Amino acid sequence: MNDSPHPSPSAVRASQEVRTVIGRLRRRILNAAEAEDLTFGQQSVLTRLSDRQGVTASDLASAEGVRHQSMTATVASLSALGLVERRPDPDDGRRLLIALTAEGHQRVAKGRQARQEWLAAELEQRCTEEERQAVLAAMVILERLTHD
Image (cartoon, rainbow, N blue to C red; front, side, top):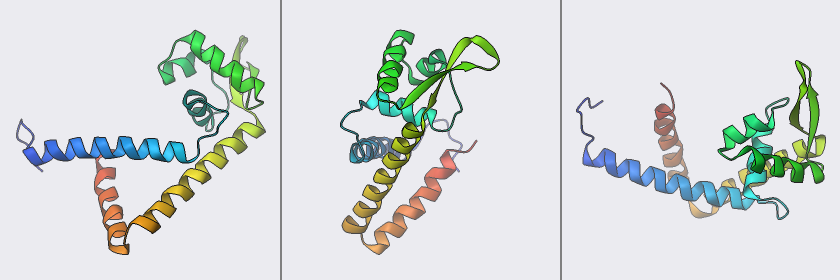
């Protein structure tokens, strides 16, 4: 690896290209399974809740980078749709935890499946086998960037 204090021109260009492509791809993937009755923020909250047993509205607001009042409104709308529920915190009865309902879990799983199917179909239709193998090789390299 290169230990110089300034990144090489190829590193700078690769950085720009990766960020641009990942941003576009992320938007396309999210749009592939976008539920017509949910906003992007609501979908994000559902996804964030999918691997948790319960979290406070304050914690959700912080994680999503929004004000507490905005998160309260988002949670209220998701609750009205039957996708989340509020339950007492077993450790602190004064607090409420927000968690997915069974229907909320189904919605998250359905969205993940739709996004997976869309991307696999796009890779199948738009790429050759050699290009798909190149994508897999690039993922190994990019994955390395995610580890400390």
